Image 1 (cartoon, rainbow, N blue to C red):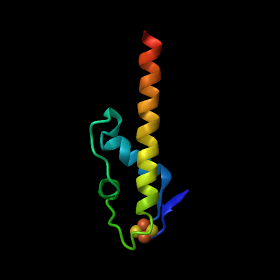
Image 2 (image 1 turned 90 degrees about the vertical axis):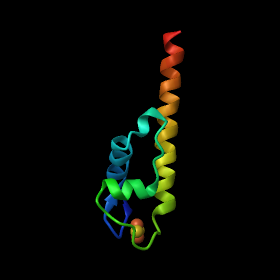
Image 3 (image 1 turned 90 degrees about the horizontal axis):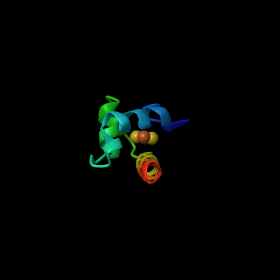
Image 4 (image 1 turned 30 degrees about the vertical axis):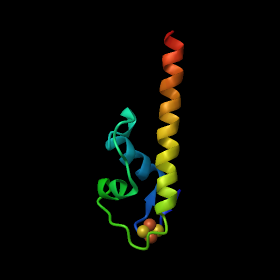
Length: 75
Ligand code: FES
């Protein structure tokens, strides 16, 4: 699904950028601006920013929940 129509960034592009940014460790700050940078793009109209932010947040939460489940499973 296209998230940013100005730059034709897809959900896949966004999530790959989050992974590349090191967002999996839960310590790195991943912002929409960083997502654009990782994709060698620049925001234009900014209409997509809230959606990209939500994708980042959802992805980070899913990663965190998966890690919690993994930790509980090891006990
Ligand atoms: S839709 Fe992303 S910058 Fe315009």
